[in-house]
Length: 181
Image (cartoon, rainbow, N blue to C red; front, side, top):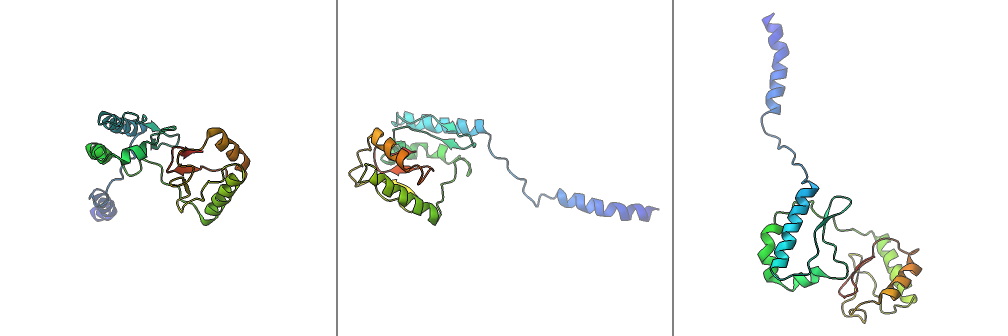
């Protein structure tokens, strides 16, 4: 009878022993929204205390990512001019988990064709200097007549006229008329 018990228990003991060996790292949980938000607020306060006073408040998007919506203020461009501020707050930024921010949009060749058609439509509807998209799907206004900004009403009219060509996000960089549609 002892041999039967030993034969039945041995596989259980081996399995239990392997499960508890620690050879398999425990999965790490994603940080909570409140943890991400607290870290984002800490970074924002650091940037502000070092001179980037218009830095927007940190927020958590509906899909759980950390974001810093700025409206008409291009804080990334402003921050890019101040290496000292970046360095001063780097230790906080280094604590962001890898999944803190929404992954960058990846555009297919078809999406890029649609964005190019959108740009052509915008040019036809009152903004002749509107550029074609770059490979990241962004419309870079640097070096164009639009670098100083696109008048809001004109932009709204072109967006309305061209919505059927591209109804996704439109990211504009390199000018004071930046932002997303």
